[in-house]
Length: 398
Image (cartoon, rainbow, N blue to C red; front, side, top):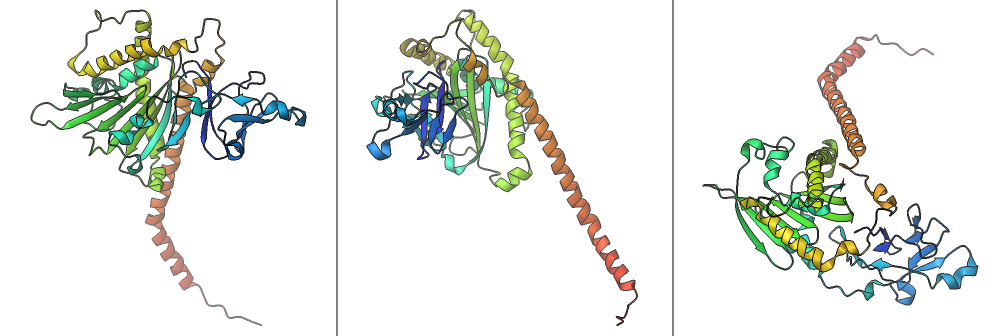
């Protein structure tokens, strides 16, 4: 996060913990280590760390053992640095400040978690099933947020990829737009023009990086998308995408139809279509080309303008990229290892496609065999009965 490597794991009470990826003994990473019964183990010398809250009431993550018993007294004075971390509604939230501390109780939490929860904005997670993918981009994370607040590009760029006929290049149009905002969020509601003024899409931006998109009216939406944008490092970002739905919730049926794999294919195709634009936009911004004199916004781009106003103010106030700055000489090990998902990793997308094709072929073969069995099985059974009836009776002889 903002160039700082982190580790998320579960302790012996199955509670999530978020620590700096840094062993205090010799500054090794926990990559390649273990999580054994809630103890996180450094791969360099086997240092074990766990929480002491059951015995001491402390919520620090302390070294319980390193090398052998001679270092017991040394170990109890070694603590990992961490951020407050909580699990709620099937999401893990981290209170990130850029400065880890030995205890999460040392943080003065200024922004309430409730402001980030989907339930606060009228969406109950428990009412829906969802499909999830991770997306990696080699571009600025704020450009991706802007992309997800841009409703018009969906028609043109993704019109041939999205299922259905209501969103495509032939149906692209302008919308009436209503925007509301407070200190916790920006909300834009798009209504179709003309006699049919139904709510088309409602978008909610929740700083710093969550976007919720309702397809249709918020209280009636059968399809909701939640996107969480994570700034990993300069020109590196990860997106967690969840598509929630109130239909096709039967897990067995979804497996038979390969619904998850088909959804993944659509997701990766859509984000691959966005990728070149996002990379070139990032370049143009870094070169100073995207100033107010050269950028001409449409009426539907008002939400984007408000986002950039917030983003610029946040950068000036928080200066997050100054917390852990890198230079041209900084080792890129973490950046290189992070880009594992499409579209930054096209091989993974190709492997997903190959898996889908293989599973589809197996499913089709199985269905064909079942159909053939239903067609020919009655005749085979009747033929076997006829053959049995025509066989001569043989008496037992002793």
